[in-house]
Amino acid sequence: MSLFRIERTVPLPPAEAWRRLTDWPAHGRQVPLTRTRVLTPGPNGPGTRFTARTGLGRLSFDDPMEVVRWEPPAPGRPGVCRLTKSGRVVRGWALVEVADAPGGGSRVSWTEELSVRGLPRAFDRVLSAVGHHVFARALDGLLRAP
Image 1 (tube, rainbow, N blue to C red):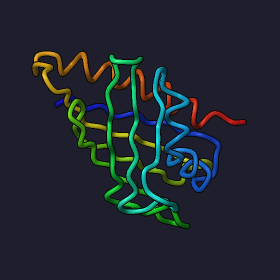
Image 2 (image 1 turned 60 degrees about the vertical axis):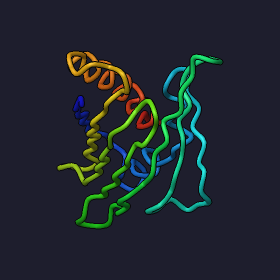
Image 3 (image 1 turned 180 degrees about the vertical axis):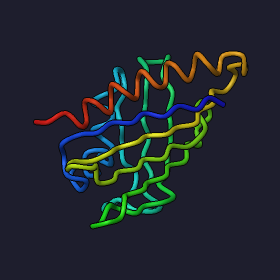
């Protein structure tokens, strides 16, 4: 499995950073060739399920995810969301954390562990680098000031 972590400090208040990072359909708009579909009625919380479909035509795969921990940020307490990935192609987990940043704004971290079915462990470093690149761009897009 490959592990990567992305950290950002942004001027957004924690509640707004959290809202943007947990807008699951918006993730699909940030990752090329990806659409995200929420499978459960809102609001978000433990048990929320969604699927990111990536690719073109027959060269596509689903990345089903479920929220297993949901603690939105509150005054003096960081927000924590943990997702599990249970697809046939992609498996693993993600941990999203949003906290007050010193001096204002938010400190955001996204940690993810991935494995891709059929991909030998020798490629873990490459998968980690690609995952880091793709998710860093997505996070930057989600957190960009309007």
